Image (cartoon, rainbow, N blue to C red):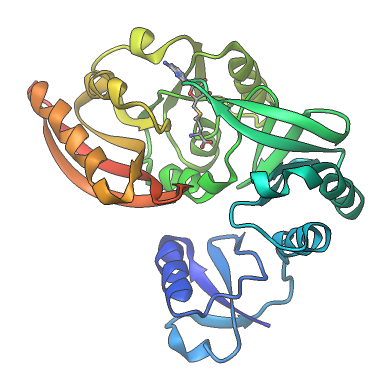
Length: 331
Ligand SMILES: C[S@@+](CC[C@H](N)C(=O)[O-])C[C@H]1O[C@@H](n2cnc3c(N)ncnc32)[C@H](O)[C@@H]1O
């Protein structure tokens, strides 16, 4: 089995190319080894890339294939929006209506096959706090520690969300942070961005604002268990507690936070960067850029768009995207 060994800085671009030309081996997971990303590819595509091709000695196979098999065995088919993920030692299922009646049977199989502590049904997220609605299907326990990008995240999956789809984005932002930067994480949650930035950059300080006391409690714990010293957790509404003119970089990791753009701009020093997330229909994919420009103009700041990427699919024909914008204020 072959894989590409790609420097981290080129990994996303190569992953996309491999997907596009059908070279990516979707049965194995992409993984990080030191400064490189190992991207599994199918036989016959070895000469399509200008990167080192290695023998994949430690392949990690995707569990979703077996999840598919389980669903197919029980329901007789595999519907489009079914999903399975593991957070720490817990399993979380998303089952569309047409297979909901099999939820306990599917959970029992998952429980046995993956030896997880509990299997939960994900029924979506509510409101600005993105609080999960979960139903326990089998087993017990909702608190766990999930490890990702060498960071530990302790959380209760019934109280706070955790998105596996943002894994690459967290590391991408962490790598962009320059030595000595002051970073503001406006929607810190349990430390989704703050912890990777603290661990994988040399930021001077990371101010992490979180309004939900449940998430804040885990943010405090995650600062402790990851041994990071430069994260300053703040319990409060970022619209009201964010100071002005102090940050080199603002992370707006909430997909419904247009209203907070003025606060983010005011938080920046004379010049700085905002990573603005939004869920946007494909038909109006440039909406987040227009919104950033609109508020910047209102506040007399200039904007240069320095990056734009899809983080993941949010819903059919709706993407979760992130805009990287450099702003210059008149000061
Ligand atoms: C969607 S989650 C962040 C998800 C994260 N970006 C990820 O990678 O998984 C958003 C967090 O923002 C918090 N939040 C919502 N409104 C807020 C506000 N006004 N001030 C501070 N935090 C807020 C929520 O409680 C939640 O923990």
